[in-house]
Amino acid sequence: MSGYLENGEWKTGTDGYADEDGEFKRWDTDYRDWITPDGSPGPDGQNAVKAEPDRFHLYVSYACPWAHRTLITRRLKGIEEHIPVSVTHWLMREQGWTFNDGPGVVPDPNENAGTIHELYQIGDSNVSGKATVPVLWDKKERRIVNNESADIIRIFNTGFADLGATDIDLYPQAHREEIDEVNARVYEDVNNGVYKAGFATTQDAYEEAVEPLFETLHWLEARLEGEDYLVGGQLTEADIRLLTTLIRFDAVYYSHFKCNRKRIADLPNLHGYLLALAGRKAIAETIHMDHAKRHYYESHVSINPTQIVPVGPELQFG
Image (cartoon, rainbow, N blue to C red; front, side, top):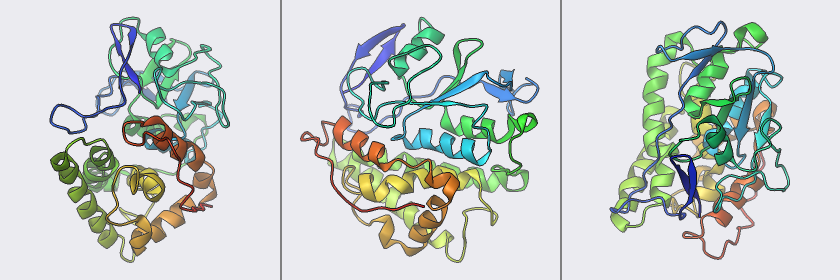
């Protein structure tokens, strides 16, 4: 069970995410401002604020693959000093994401919020929509800068260049068109595809999601033949965006979301790619499978009413 915001008021909902046709529908993200080194507009003219020390804060769930993208990018760019992190509890029920006590939870030091939805309410007293993570927060203006993970990883890639960020470029100009093409297919069929399969409430909706999911996994398997990365022979955001879904696939999506045609372990190129990337120290230290497994199996009571968390598989990253 979760909830949503309506004109600034938190409404308790259910843990169902499908529409009347049984298809999963993802809510849009509404906060799309940018951070740039000098405060100039973002790459598509977005309103932007200047990157400054001790101004921004990142709120995440270790369970969430979308938030996990931002943690990996933050670490690879070496901007931990400028972007401290708060971590929610894995269990998402009536109040959505909370900072209830639990192993790995890092409370909110800025607003002393007990839930993520309180941050949305502080930033906009009339807010409507889902209270999702990640949240990139502006401490100076007490508002959400951005809550779209695809944006946040690009903000982290370039926004803090003048504050000591590493020079790794995860969205290199020469490969942007190809990265965007890979991202689009991976998002639709894999990143979001597992949710479309898992939260479907009709057989047709489930099969309409699971078929392209495995078509794209096999496409990725072929693409990685003899390759270490998806695009350009180098690590890019396309790898990070895929990786966080692969990390959770065999332990969660395979069983909990009924994506059980094959495991990632059954696809040798994808499996080797997963182990190589997730085994990097900087990435391995962002992986918290205890939060991931407990979140999905304990939170989604319509899918797993017993809330029993499977003991396997035994996964080791790093």
